[in-house]
Image (cartoon, rainbow, N blue to C red; front, side, top):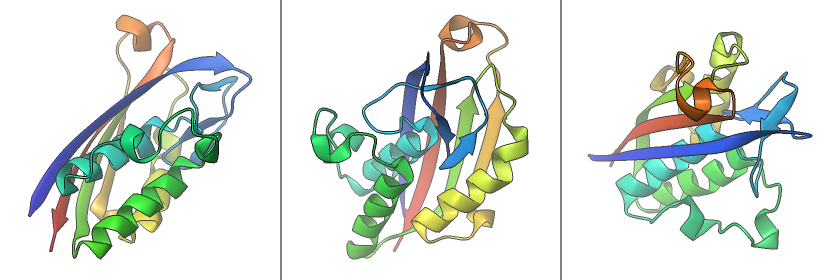
Length: 156
């Protein structure tokens, strides 16, 4: 078995759609980034890459590369999940913590679990997503951005 950890954060900006875990979330602001800036998917990609010793999301899908401009991060997750299958591995389970002061994310957690699971070829019962606030502390607490942490277990 192999364990990997991932992290990502992005700044909230006007004029962008908010995508988290592959799900569109109603919000006046979205995350700024080269792709769709889905911090949950990015953290999961990095966790899988870490467990499989594939580098990180920036190595595989560099910002500045026009092929990945506004790319679906769920699509990038599908690519990485396919790479580990080719290595003879599969995702056993994923645990994600997403930290956002707003909007309230709990109504979207089930859909995120389903979308992430489908991208990795696993049932939603193997994908945990927990939404937290930062209690008003730091850049997240001030509503300037959103962050996510992920841990993944790969098995042969």
